[in-house]
Image (cartoon, rainbow, N blue to C red; front, side, top):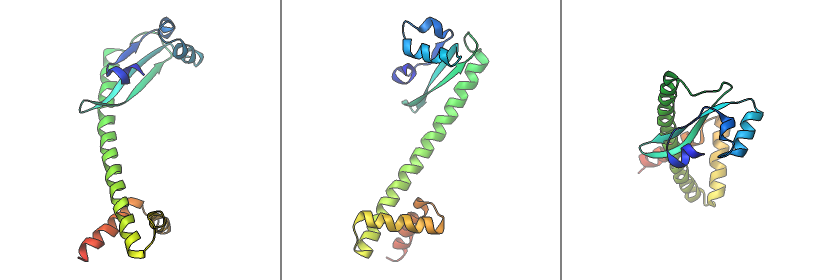
Length: 143
């Protein structure tokens, strides 16, 4: 996607007119009844995380008001996405540490330790990261 590669918003007010530049895209979009598109990069702190493409059944550019609304939604989405990615990475680190604790405690390989962790999470209907966090917290209190 051009918006992702370049970091620039791309407006295509007439998809049919873009057949020379993007023949496959234009054919696919038109087959689905779309006549215009608007692509916005999802950017957070200068890094492009992805892109959002909005399609329209109407020819023409977005209004200034619609473009401003989309930009605001994209900013909110990238902030939320970034926060979610950080939480997921933090949980993954905690899970890996808890696997190590279980492997050492029970004398089992890491994959068996993960199976123990996952089985307990399923049995108690808790998130894996929450169970791993409890393991790490209880380990810190016993020292």
